[in-house]
Length: 115
Length: 152
Image: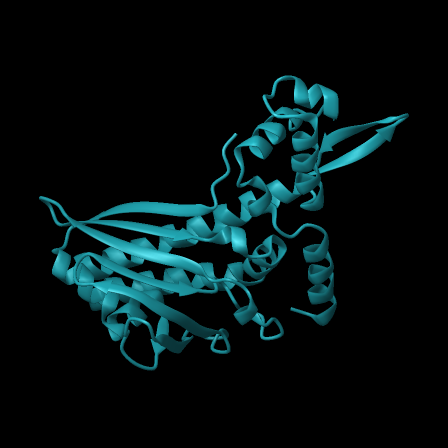
């Protein structure tokens, strides 16, 4: 709980804050699903399987980029997008822990009312 | 791939709905299994205040806003989960919603718990807050389990 640690937390919050919000969209989820295999894709490649326009896909990719879930690499004239696993791992880990706490809390409630 | 921003739990309790309802909504009973000392009864629309009673964590305040109390059916409140760092102003963050729903079964009560709204909280704060407090909470949970087993 030191101040140092706190400020580093604050820094990270700025760079990769609304991960859940970024994932709360079918199109973005499908883009993440495609990218999370590890291989970087160009916007053209990512647009191929979609009914959406290139512009719409780009907009979604930028939302993911702002949340730190993907980052773009420029190759010549085209941008390729690559998956960054850490933000999603972090929220998954957090939810697992909260979930585990509830398991324990409910077990206590169970003993309390059944005792 | 599926991302959930909510937690859902289901547990069968071998106790009548009325008993479970009391354990959830009587602030003293709630305090016993949740391990929190509350200042007063739960009232819908009002803030519930208190503090964690586990040794070493007395500085951790409990604060929630009671949302619904539909007798023997639904008890819900909003709160800021794991707000353990006095330096962070949690009140600026959107709280999560915790709901306890009760259903009568042949053997007692089915309790459905959900916590939702995690998408509104900065994700790193959540993780850090949790990590900091993890040891304390886990230990605390065991404590309550023992206490509950004894007092029944």
